[in-house]
Image (cartoon, rainbow, N blue to C red):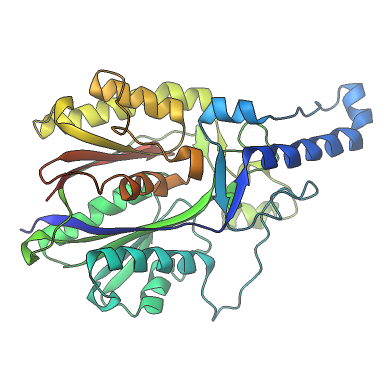
Length: 371
């Protein structure tokens, strides 16, 4: 048996930024257009008038101040309020593959590896732009990597579930060098016209390289991993070929991100806190043994709650870093961004815990030690 170690990480960040103020201005313009166009129905009580959003509401509700997106113009168009992606020829690189390759190259540069060293690529993301061929296999071809590749989806926990899968393969010796890549085009499955969620997501791609410590590699030893799932409809997206075939002419709200926010808070927070506590106990680790918590970046209030629950106190600055204010919720990539940006200062022997959670419900965690 071998010891898996994360030797590199990389983040692809889109060029376009949408601030809360920009988003609110466009959203409110859309609301005014909607209310004007449906004035008669609103007066009759047949439909409800839409209400304005504001930057203070967004910041207080989520901790988000801006987000990176692939397409800014379409999202901020009050007559559209959704990104516009040009169709690509079948022989052209897909958007997700393009983003993923960029993140992988950055991770490989940090690990000192070349694409030809890769044995396995897992494309772990919450939404894939097509059913097949697998995005992971396309990435493999674009990189010139050998071995094998496949896609996996566990919503916001995809990256940590992918980490466990890759680490297990490295541990058993079936592969020497694995890559988990998470290209998240979250702007494409968000309803930007819904005041309750129009601010939540951003676009990004992350990648991590997992190898064998016995090969003389340094980085973060994967001490252990743990995953759990419990079915819930409180975070759901019904988009799929069966729905599209049946309802292709309808504007189906349920074909985009939907959630029962209050229920998610009530049910997910205890689940995640218990999961982390149990994982640490199994490794004979206490809260004082943790240098850092790299948590899923969905909501600042959720992270503050989990951090306080796990540590038994309010986390000190830097113990539980958030990247929400800059990136917004980037689904499975969020915890990896936090790890990539806030791990270089850790000394050999220091321990951190990586954790993501979301639709499913799902929660995945990894105990990592700097070596």
